[in-house]
Amino acid sequence: MGYHAHKNHPKRLGNGTRVQGEPFDYEILLPNWHACFDAKECHDTKWHMQKKDIIQTENLKHCKNAGCEAFFLIYFFPTKQLVKVDVDEVINVLQQGSKTVGAEKGGEFNIGLIIDKAANELH
Image 1: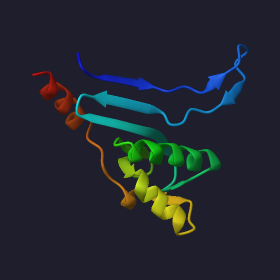
Image 2 (image 1 turned 180 degrees about the vertical axis):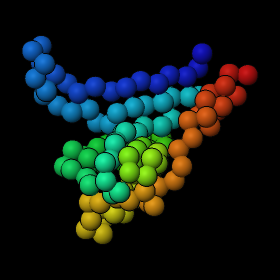
Image 3 (image 1 turned 90 degrees about the vertical axis):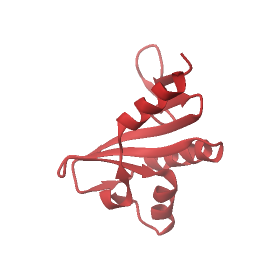
Image 4 (image 1 turned 30 degrees about the vertical axis):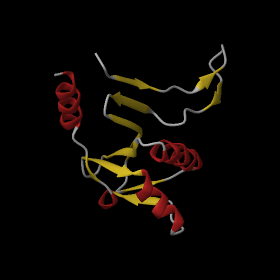
């Protein structure tokens, strides 16, 4: 149909032992739009990045450099907000010496726009 989306998974041994994490969680491929993102949940008003998040940031930046839209999709439980934070904004935060991202750094995520984009490209 001209589009594809999938969830990446970590590399594991036959017994389930985790060997390597996924570079990021999801990829969406439409004929004229490609996106890569990692989904996070946050039980605080700020997302506190861990080492794996910084590695995922680097992987997402490679995707953005190749022409994809690359971002973190963060759900903040205290405020019930789903926020899309561009990878460049996360890099900005890291370059300032912080590992903390608040919802104000991102914008609204509207899955309906993606669905509409896919539907329009099929016609």
